[in-house]
Amino acid sequence: MNRMEGRRVVITGAAANIGAATAELLAREGAHVVIGDIDPNAEATAVRIRQNGGRADFRATDVSDGASMSQLLRSAAEWMGGIDVIINNAGVQRSSPITEMSESDWDLHMSINARSCFLAAKHGVPYLVQGSSPAIVNMASVGGFKAPAGLAGYSASKGAIIAFTRTLAAELGPRGIRVNCVAPGWVDTPFNDPIVSHMGGREAQDAAVRAGVPLGRQGRSEEIAEAFLYLASPASSFVTGHALVVDGGAS
Ligand SMILES: NC(=O)c1ccc[n+]([C@@H]2O[C@H](COP(=O)([O-])OP(=O)(O)OC[C@H]3O[C@@H](n4cnc5c(N)ncnc54)[C@H](O)[C@@H]3O)[C@@H](O)[C@H]2O)c1
Image (cartoon, helix red, strand yellow):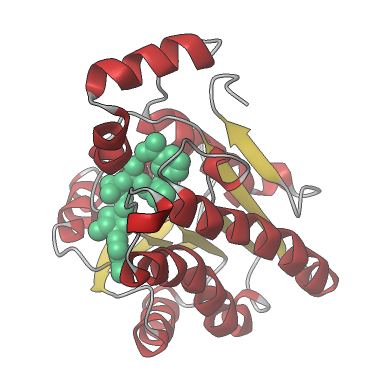
């Protein structure tokens, strides 16, 4: 299949797990990919894509920093000859009761999870308007609707992303740019270690998954990648302002 043939994609947070699975799936579908991540290990994702015959490159990027995001998008547009899709996947999670939550942890959620989406749009739209079937896909979470106790800061940042996505879709629709987000439930990655620890460990999480997820298991990174593929490809050409929930029925 060539569902992303020739499409020029910038994706953040693709060192491993959901971001890497998404970058690799899109590349297999014919996309050219530039990965922005603060973790230099994300270079390995680009190397794997190239080894498999795809086209990918890595740029060291802090998504919470305006100058860094602006530089990522400028250099990606130069390297690929433009940008058609921006996927804002980078994120962090901290967990604590609200009275113990540090101000810096609150700010960290807001700047890395939510501010990054604003920065990508602010600096990316001038490229997208010249792109083909342009799209922004943000990484939200079902936690943006309601998360377990101990995740109030994370939840607030993901809720902000959902509101931002819907509002930006209204603003950019007339310019031909679609804006959507993916809202996964439990996905089995180390990203959830803070909340799993807060819940009492892996057994407590397994019990919560058995009780709360009709499909009875956590999602896999590759299953979330499929949602990004749909929203990034022209297959979703009449979909905008949507939060695509991928949670095994939990919500
Ligand atoms: N795992 C889950 O259950 C789950 C559920 C819903 C949503 N999500 C979201 O999926 C995304 C990816 O999560 P994951 O589970 O693959 O974990 P992950 O830790 O592998 O992914 C996070 C990525 O963001 C990068 N990153 C962090 N801070 C950054 C910064 N300042 N600048 C640039 N890159 C930065 C990390 O290096 C990493 O590559 C996150 O946004 C997360 O909120 C995860």
